[in-house]
Length: 239
Ligand SMILES: Nc1nc2c(ncn2[C@@H]2O[C@H](COP(=O)(O)OP(=O)(O)O)[C@@H](O)[C@H]2O)c(=O)[nH]1
Ligand SMILES: [Mg+2]
Picture 1 (tube, rainbow, N blue to C red):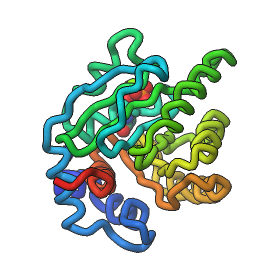
Picture 2: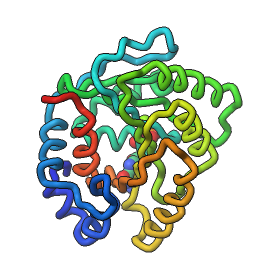
Picture 3: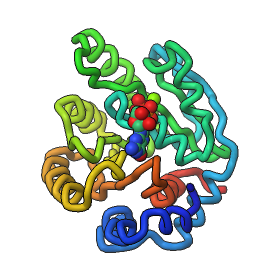
Picture 4: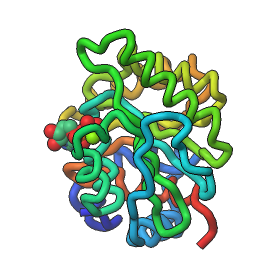
């Protein structure tokens, strides 16, 4: 899993149908072989933990281009970042008690920071918890001139929940560019996925922060991982 070939072989015809979704800026354009190779090369490099930050004053200075990952708790964020990096680095670190409410920053090949934002939307989240997420994340978003994009992870089965709309509103206000990544695509059939994508595209039109293209992934099957790597490599510092 993880290499472009394995990704394509593993997903079979499904992968072809998703080419229009997972390609470049033009929805009808496939991701180029060069872009896929650049993504593969970048993510084959070492990825190391830089810092776990629980309060705004502790944020390290911004140096490298950054891409942040956000989403509801349990959406598959750790699994996706592990699939991207081909390592267990991030998930292992995040499992350390206390770390899940933090912003965890990783450095990939001295070219890109991968930033794991705390999950939100617990079933019975207290108002104070929502406020804490918003406070820390808003502070991060406002203070990161190097932040290139937030990848907002959404479960392919469920579409946008209220908490996702709230997160998107925070991103809209911060004028940060965002892109939705559907997770756990292996859990939906093709017809359901197509219907969910259509609904999502309509809902996202309300949010100015959002990239029109939605990336469909399955960390379990390796679907969309090579395409996502290619997109992230375009945001990284030059090699
Ligand atoms: N079927 C399937 N399950 C997944 C996938 N990605 C994550 N999961 C499962 O979803 C649950 C939450 O995943 P995790 O990565 O810990 O989510 P996080 O809380 O967002 O970091 C775990 O039980 C994972 O095994 C996927 O692509 N396919
Ligand atoms: Mg996690």
